[in-house]
Amino acid sequence: MTDYLVGQVQKHLPHIPVEVVSQGAEALVFKTSVHPYLPNSISPYLDNHDEYIIKFRPPKPYRHPKIDASITKNRTVGEVKFMSKLARIGIRAPSLISADFNNGIIWMECLGQTLPNGEVSSFKNWLWYLERNEIPDKCVSDEVRVVCIKVGALIGRLHLNNMVHGDLTSSNILLENFEPALIDFGLSSYSGLAEDKAVDLYVMERAILSTHSVFSDKYNAWLLEGYEQIHETEFGKQGKKKHLETIRKLEDVRLRGRKRSMLG
Amino acid sequence: MSWTSVSFPSYPQYTVFISLFTGIENDTISTVKKELIAANAEYDFCFLNTYHVVSVEHLYGSIHRSIANYANDTLKARTVNTEIIFNLSPINKIMEALKKFGVDEKCPNIIAIKVFKTEDIDEKSFIDTNNHLLKLLRIEKDSNIELNDKTLGQLVDVPKVIKVYKLSDVKISSDESQKQAQLTRLVVAACLLRGL
Image (cartoon, rainbow over all chains, first blue to last red; front, side):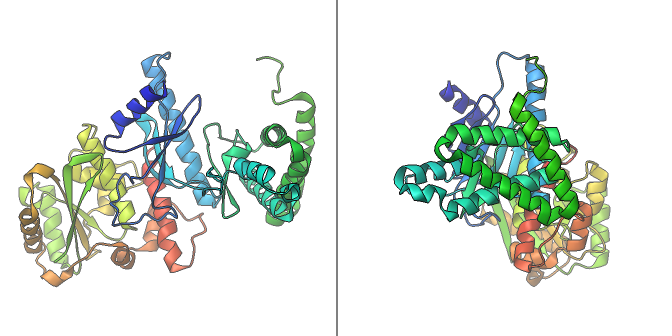
């Protein structure tokens, strides 16, 4: 199946070597060494000049072709818009390079480094790496605490701009020199409601609980600490109020789960 | 004399000729404008003023998208030359884009672009094309400077860019070296999202 999908992306991107990085239900993520429009002699204004990411939403054969084309286009546009908004407000996320909306292709910056064990430096991989290779103390060291607080602050800044990520997990946060960046905005939306923000936080809490269960209590507490701090430092009294509202909602969400209605 | 030629990995069948000229007389620009409207074949180039071109990446991004549309036969504008101007713009009106990004009496600097079929050209045709442009724009060879981020950074009008691309609510870095990088990222995204 993946080979077939790779063939499809190659049809839209002739002469571009691609390597599959990850595959989800909706999209495939590739890595390539070729910039779509700048020759090697000219460096793009990005930190990484050697690798670029291509996100491809393949057509779904089970949908009507016309509906499929419109869904693919709308979701690709939505994601690009979200990323461009993040760039405008200065939240660290991959920069846009190019996009082909009709074919569901987005070219973006390749963030993250490689950990000593060869994995990409996502928040998840880094925590796992510490858990497996270092003395246990390191997992809850000050270094980890600082990173968790930074991640919490990043999510707080996102929410303060009335943006909701929709799929916050530790693998959707990349670390670059211990500075977190968000990726994967396929489920992102705009919302100022405390409810939606609380659900966003709840999804993250559950993700941490299942992927980093040994120290999940500490991690979650630090994340929420960072989340609270940014509300107060950036928005003062008003931010404090917003934070309280979201946290109250979070408690409700914890009791009832992610879905508000009992249907579906 | 200095020009650049570029070909994109996905579309090797096309080669694009790009050249930057400075210090052009007002009268000449008026003539160029007139001849472009009259569709004189001698003036079959994409002419841009430099005020709104932030960096090489910005320019190439627009050319790349235009070539892709050209190759896939999905041009929005009538010619590939206009398409390049249109794709450089965040405004979804071709006439507006031509007014903002095309030749303008207020800007004495011009970027000239022409798309060739790769099989039709060699080094000599580039020299001929460049000489032809020097003649059309009535300038000497030393006004034809290299097109790179440094030269574009000197010729760009940042307040105009911020206005056209609606970036007034963005905190723009005051550090000159960071500014071009940040603006490039913002305008590239704005161009992609034109009309959406």
